[in-house]
Image (tube, rainbow, N blue to C red; front, side, top):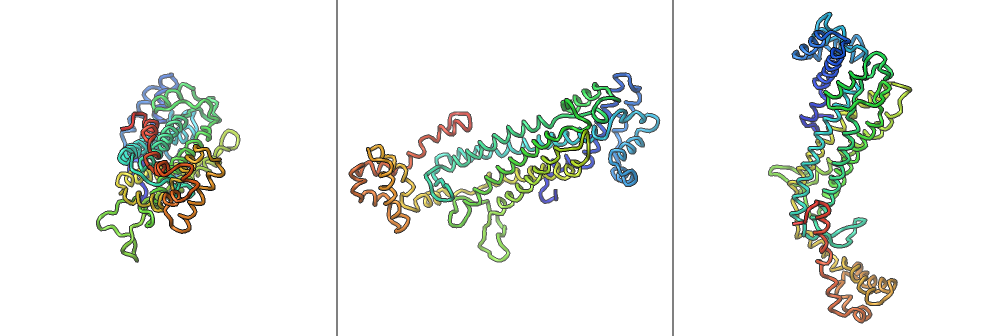
Length: 437
């Protein structure tokens, strides 16, 4: 991923330095295990560990790979140069390249998941704070982009909180599923290496041994992992899209923080555009771009091929780095989001009480009128609001049939906005797991 959308900690997970350090630790732990089993001399394993005090020469590894055309062999050749001969002769004994590559990749994915986990927790904290801040602030709910019934701004934040809580659980599951390692040798039969070596390496590196690796770790695990990233990214876009709508000039219920000196347009000095949330929608698409290739990687020939390799070299860093950046940016947007409660009230009342139509409908039904006739009575008055700009309450009060069924007092009662928010505390208790404050 380009530096513009990269944060240091996540980018470091995918750096060559990190990758080669993990490869080295896999090989060194494997030597330790083989020494414990008496397969290789203890001094050889110790010599490998001593080499870890040295800095791997990335340029030298690239130089060797230019000749060998094999990245793992290039690394092992350089490692042998550091360890020395004959001490290095047992490095990688009984292992195959996939043992190193797949185990390393899964370590990188688990580390990336840990960073993403922290990102979501940070976002949840901000969403929770803003939900309680605006728990009782009325705004109009919309369906199909059209005014529906009153809700609150706090409920909007609360539903995003609930969504991200589900994503946190999904990510936890995805991390658990991807946290496996394999040191099983060619075609995964352990023919030339003891399964206890795999147990030892995985234990040291915080992984579970892959039950059956067939030389490569099964890619259904990776498909599930990247699919989870895609769902999280979709939630990011969901939240960003709501903010973009709220910032539209004719809505203006909220807007991204606009800092001093910031410019919105090269041509129009008045512009304050939702550039951050627009950017988040684009970043979400980049993350989701990894999902289909990850699923296609599940299908490999027999025990092993490398059709998945080039894909993973791209989607591993790109998807995790991009999502990490997107979650951090969204957290900052929510934290600094400027809300306009007065505009929310203005928008809700723009059509002069029209959004209370369902309550009037239900009141008429309870008064003994059939649903079909009640709907007709309400709709004929509602259309006057749409088409002529009339006041909905006044039209109902002037409708003889409606007044006969309900009376003025009951009609006025149906326009109490508190009716729509009386269960907000119950919803908050469900979402946040505590009695709402």
